[in-house]
Image (tube, rainbow, N blue to C red; front, side, top):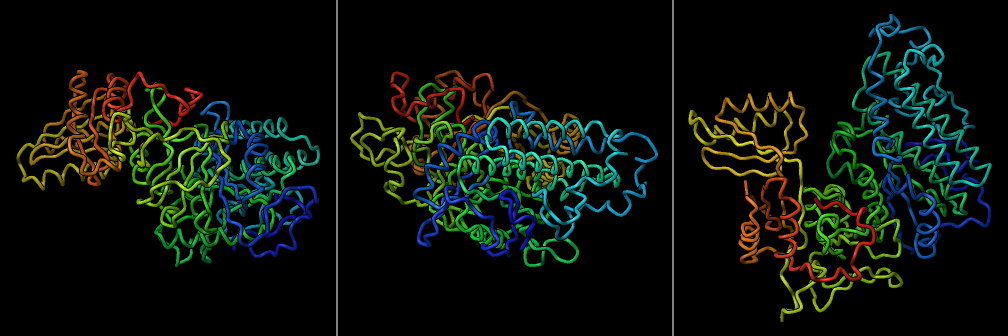
Amino acid sequence: MSETTTSPSSPLSSRSASTSSSSAPRTPPNLHQNTIDPVAKWLVQKFGGTSVGKFAVKIADDIVSEYLDQHKIAIVCSARSGSTKALGTTNLLLRAAKEALQRTSSPSETPGHMTPALFSQVHSPIDSPRQRSVSSPRTETHNPFTTGQFGMSSVTQDSPMFHSTVDVIRSEHIKAARSSIQSAEILRELELEIERDCDGLRSFLIATQVIDEISPRSRDSIIGFGERLACKVMTAILRDRGIDAEYVNLEHIVPLTEDGEASSDTDTLGQDFYDHVAEAVAERIKQCGSRIPVVTGFFGPVPGSLLRQVGRGYTDLLAALLAAGLGASELQIWKEVDGIFTADPRKVPTARLIPIISPEEAAELTYYGSEVVHPFTMEQVIRRKIPIRIKNVENPKGGGTVIHPDPDIDALPDLYPDEERVIAIPGTTTIFRPLSDPSSDSPERKLPTAVTIKERIVVLNVNSNRKSVSHGFLAGVFGTLDRYGVVVDLISTSEVYVSMAIEDGLDKKVMDRVVRELKKSGTVTVSRDMAILSLVGKRMRNMVGIAGRMFTTLGHGNVNIEMISQGANEINISCVIDARDAVKALNLIHQSCLQIRPEGARGRGAFRFPDKVMYLG
């Protein structure tokens, strides 16, 4: 497998996948452990960066401890988020990588120039096929990535920018450790780990300066550093609280060839690759025995780069693969919200918590602006019939929202009978609607599930110059978008006219080039400050009149519609409106189409903290 033994006495050391459980660190008898009952089901808990950054102690005391009595627990952590988003570890690492390539003109930093001290070590130890883990201060392996032996003393002064950024990362994690850990021994070991890893990061960044390049795979490795630090801190906090946790590093879980690339049987990022990773990760976790594994969300190397192929949601993906490989009873994703709501409660006062939702609906909400779970992540567990539950670290007794894999389920199994239910579903068998209209005689109301808004949208309108037939016109338009990597959220076409809604995130120079290219196909107009309003619901299929009600409501509210689109799966109706009307339109549709009226009290389903909600728009 991927890892080798570094220090069998340290719980912060990641053991080899091939090492027997007998070599595990000796555990004091008073530490809480996973059950070794082979019949007991696994429960995978994934904690986001903000949760790890702000509520690590609460996670240990109120969440992990509570679930240990009934489940075998595996924990996956994202990189910590700091006091502000800019101070999030991932953002700081990306900044450090960028700063490493902002070079001075000194001879020693001329591209291609290597000092004697650096000559034999410019190849990244991370990129080598296999290296020993660097998580223990007692490691016997000489690893320049860990010990910072790339000529640090001679280069530090030449690279003040990324060194300052690494210092911020170091101080944020040491500050978190000192404020959370009481045991002097555990704290001392953790601080040594943090210092050692930060020195290793500096060495790696210095190596990128020597070759004047950061490859996609090297960038992945830099980003993965955040998950490694977060998991070490969480492992130490759990052990300090009497929980027998073990840090598990998965950065080498994918087998490599002699050339250092992914092996031939995993050379594409398809389902076969993910099945292989799920099996390998599960096997590694089982080697923890009765210990509670704290698993890095970063795994690699991935063909084509993890960051490019998956994006920054790779931690959710790893948690899903782990749940699939272990055959878990449930995947829990812990955030700072009670679950998924019928609308953004910060904008719609009557928004209600949705206790259960289908994967298709959750995927649509994610695509059109919400921060639910990436559809790619959902696919890995839903295909194994494993439910996903979104829960709130600040309200661990709440039931949350379940994304359930069974499309024909009539009721959610009572997986946690002792938990307080956040909302009751009065008088209806409809499982994807939290509320029903009490004036209706129908036991099953066909109502949408949620309404969401996606702001910062630009609409590109292209009118053909009629110099080509329709398919040639459309081919030219889409070819231009493909060349510049422009993702289209909504599209509406005719023989000579096409309208496209895209996110307003393109660099101005890139957007100008796109518009110039499109003008070769016809007249182009650009409408900015727009928003996509989407009505989502699985039970909207074959629902007569729902589109009419939506657009009539907007018309009566004096909301102009710039563009209309309905998804092929018939569970989503979207339109583009002026961003100034976004909040008004959201409330109008929430009241009219979901039949949740302003005079209705939010009741038990009310979200206690309006400033901390799952953003559905």
